Amino acid sequence: MEKDTGKQMTSFGATAPPFIDYLKDILRRYPDGGQILKELIQNADDAQATKVVFIHDERSYGTESLWTEELGKYQGPALYAYNNAAFTEDDWGGIQMAGRSVKRDDPNKVGRFGIGFNSVYHITDVPSIFSSGHLGMMDPQEKIFGERSGGFRWSLDDAEDQDVLMNMSDQFQPFRDIVSHVCEHGWSKVVMEDQHFRGTIFRFPLRSEASEISDNLYDSDKVIELFDSFIADADLSLLFLKNVTSVSLLHISEDGAVNTRLEVKSSVPTDGVLESEEESVTEGLTRFKVITVSSEDQKETKWLLTTCTMKEGVAEDLDLLTKKLSFLPQVDLAFPCGEKRDCSQSRLSCFLPLPNNESNKTGLPVYVNACFGLTDNRRHIKWQEEDQRHDEHALWNEMLMKKVFPQAYIKIIQDAIKLAQNSILPVSSVYNLWPDLTQIQHKEKWHALTLDVFHHLFRQNVAILSLAKDERQFISPSEAVFPCNGPTSTNILSAIKRALVSCGENLVTLPASVAKAINEAYPNPTTLKHVTPAFLRAILHRTGVDNITKDDKLSLLEYILGDEQYKELEGLHLLPLSDGSFRYFTYREEDTALIDSHEFPRVLLPFCKPFFIPHDLTPACSAHLKELARRSK
Image (cartoon, rainbow, N blue to C red):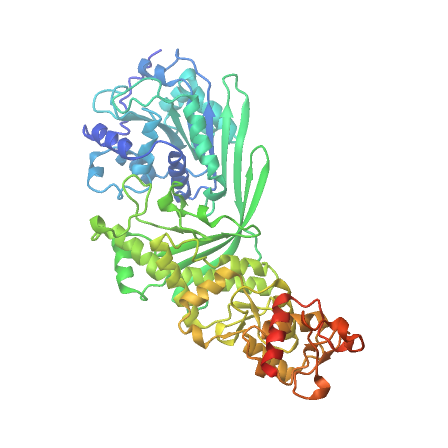
């Protein structure tokens, strides 16, 4: 049934003729896929919504009671996007602006409904919106509501429109049904009593036939692919959003059965919140964020999240671009606590994760988020390559990574140390936060940025290394005694650790990746103290070996023999005998120990058996002692 109210149409979504061409160009460049859902979530987050629900509804509705006959083809299956923030008048204006050719001049100047929102035209020809005081339908092809009319809007505070919304049953039944899913109040209360919907429902009828906009037909399988694409990134989707704390994916079958495919939620525990020091060049905050993903099973991940914003007046060139582009000089880093993730999977976000391709992967142990300048198709970050040398968005990205990223990285490491000292975070997490230069050696840009982070970190000479005697105590590299370089057995390393800890040396423990970072990026690595045979001999000369176990003495002996500086052994009570005792390394006769050989085996001197060195020493230790004996002749 076609309705004639005798009332002049409320123009909505009016477009200029070039818009279809512009839209086709956007769809050619802008990818179909999971990014569409991310754009809708981003819009919701910008509107300060806390909840987003996507609904794949396979039901078809009646076509008898419609506003115009042309709307009958849009009564089939649809994708809905709900959020709990209502449209403002600016939003109603902005979503119409998204369809005007003025966007050709600057697609970034129309607020939340820019290029991203127009990606919904991959799915539909007639998007509609129910929010605050209106229900509007957009028709860029201008085929439904009359010539030069790109849409129509009904108002909830208009008596005639109320009558249409309540009584044109087929036309508005899809919205009536979805309102019942997402709102505690029914359709009639919202329309007749409240005259206001405290949220937003987008309806995107799936394109079932080719149109001027696109020949991309959208069936249920494609919506499932859309959902699957989002599910793959679900645990990252809420990490860097400011407001949205819940996203759900629902499926409604043709018979009306509702199934929740996925729900992802975020929460911020109150423990472990750390703010920047006042004298810092940045304003920052570190806290935990818990992401819970529920589908067939449930997965919970606790993240350490640091936000770092450059203060105005610190970097003039960055301040100028901040004002010009209206971007925020902020970098966020997120680190998954309690699990050692594959760094090759860490990637960039621009509030929501960017596509999972190689150029968006960093090789870092943290996930990096910022208000990046993106390429036209929103899939990549712009960098200052030859063809973008003077591109301001590319320059912005470079400056952000050069000036703010190192500050953010230093803050997350130092805050992790504070949390570890208070037993809120495992100490292992602190070292897991350090970038592994080996992992990123083939990523030239991130390798250079990581070296930059290390240079900043080491210049400050702050406490960043965990002490072996108490792992929750940290000291600076200049105060530390570093473990020995080169291949050494676990037994020897353990014996050295016990010996140095017992005599109060500042031995630190660190994984190979941290040692590599210090070797490659510390400004004067030769000034650092490392465990060497000479260093250990000097310590043992000073402290003696009386409190060291027999097994540890043998391990220490093997190590300090390694550089063949045998003269420096004199006076150490470490010369082992077969009866388990030790003698001093001296030239005195009473300290003599015997070493057998093939020519003179120890069985030839049965009465001297206790004076031989043990026969079960390691081959390396035996060889050194024999060489020492040979040189002493």
